[in-house]
Image (cartoon, rainbow, N blue to C red):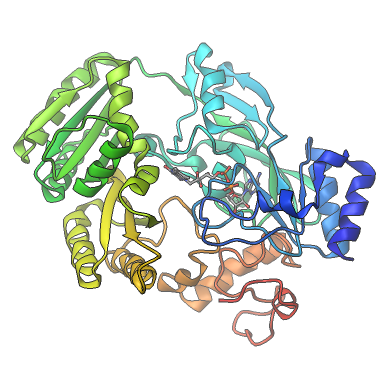
Length: 485
Ligand SMILES: Cc1cc2nc3c(=O)[nH]c(=O)nc-3n(C[C@H](O)[C@H](O)[C@H](O)COP(=O)(O)OP(=O)(O)OC[C@H]3O[C@@H](n4cnc5c(N)ncnc54)[C@H](O)[C@@H]3O)c2cc1C
């Protein structure tokens, strides 16, 4: 059945404004936060309930049409890139906060709910939702679940996977099923764990039960300026080695500071080669004692200026520079790649030095912004597409950075996911047997490969094949509708 026929079927049960086929309107959804991949979807659908979402997926399954889930479209790995002959299922109308249950420390929300709204709903009860991606004012909980998103405060509190206790999902066949629940653990295989971080390849989350965390008694934040990243990295290691677990430790290098200043005038100390933002939270007495130790460690490792946030406004200003850093880089470079890799924290000095060397060899500038506490790097590779060869050199630097991360025992992605962008990089970390084993999990949920095809894995393989037999092309590949790497 063609996309037109699928759209006609969907219009029989949904309102006209829930099914878009006008090409101009479809263009709005042609990319996510990674705008250099663009595909106009075949049809865009806005279910308003879980049942409607299931009905849409059932219609796709009945007609063999692939589908891609989309939350707010802020993903940075092309995970929500549409399929030209497929349905893009957007969760923006699934926006109810179904329940806030402080007595159970849980909230139950629909997938299109914006991350920050969960905390806003929980705050009056003395609670909040801890995972805080820098995009938290716009990204959806469904997208967070699919990407296992992190954020500045995940150093102490853990990633999305540590805060989701249950989901209701639509399987790729269109069935509504529940994984996990309200209780912290369920017997049997951890299918919830498999779903969180599966990037829309195992089905669509239609309801999410999250943990709520008590608001801390006190929060204290400092900004320390260092001559360079080596000293700031050494201070980070010293703080954590001393047994202090800050809520967040974030680092920005000189180029990232320059960009943030140009964009949001955050007033970071002049002449800094690196700044650290360190935040402690918890019981007042403990925070006070540890805060003094953190200041000492920063000074011992070369901090030449330390500012302590006097109030919430100043604290917000410290964070404003950091949280706007990705977009701010647009002020100092017409184009840039946001890279995302992980290394063991102790490897920071060697890795940053090596990144600097590779950038210099290629004549490319790299600004570094990262979650220093857990070694999650976000090198921003700057280039100008109008200069011949610069985009290619930036791409080469970006790929080399991932090699450096893997060589140091790290990973090709910390929190932005694999999506379409990094599928080709997975073999840098995994053998073919590893990938085949993961593919078996995908095939158990989605034997026909209809859920977000072409994403995450380097080559769409035929489900049902025994590992080792990789010759047959995937039907979607043969039909030319799945991207092949
Ligand atoms: C300025 C900026 C800062 C960012 N900072 C961070 C950060 O600090 N930490 C971080 O981790 N990420 C960060 N991101 C990346 C991005 O915001 C996260 O990956 C976020 O979780 C994506 O949510 P979304 O709603 O926009 O999802 P989308 O981009 O719409 O989709 C992302 C993936 O999730 C799938 N998906 C969406 N909804 C569902 C659902 N209901 N069920 C199943 N699959 C679904 C999609 O198919 C896709 O594969 C940042 C992005 C930007 C633009």
